[in-house]
Length: 173
Image (cartoon, rainbow, N blue to C red; front, side, top):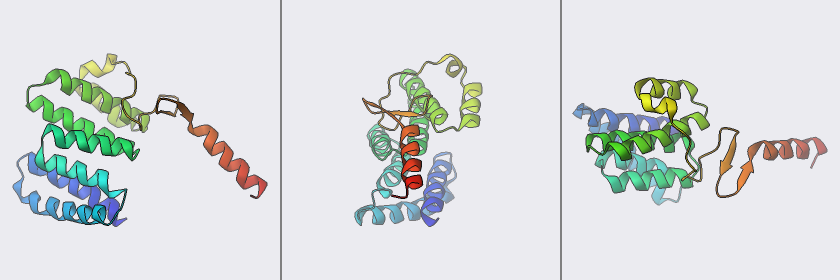
């Protein structure tokens, strides 16, 4: 529980700091240090969170790209969606609307894949172009199709994995 709490507390703290609330920097840095320590100790779950927080703190293209890649590699679809959305907002501030739209579109589809349908609906209401957006080929190993399968170059249906696990449990193995 602490991991989740500090993850989202740190992400929120850096987001609020970037919106002008400087008092949140200290809290964000404490969370960042926690995940840095976990990452250095070999926690594979800490790396994407650490890099995403670092990207929010630094706000540059390379930091966001590293965070997005780490989230995708770890198949943290929810963090990848959030990182892509935050990167899109950063790109809009940098007046790179085309790239911002591309990242926001991919975040939109990741939110849909994650079944965060209300978030996707809110995004489509705020950004009109998302209502007519088409899914592009997955650039992420965690991006899944609307049918619930992951696209990693090969299609892998999660339903078959869950069915197999149920069959194994029923057989008593």
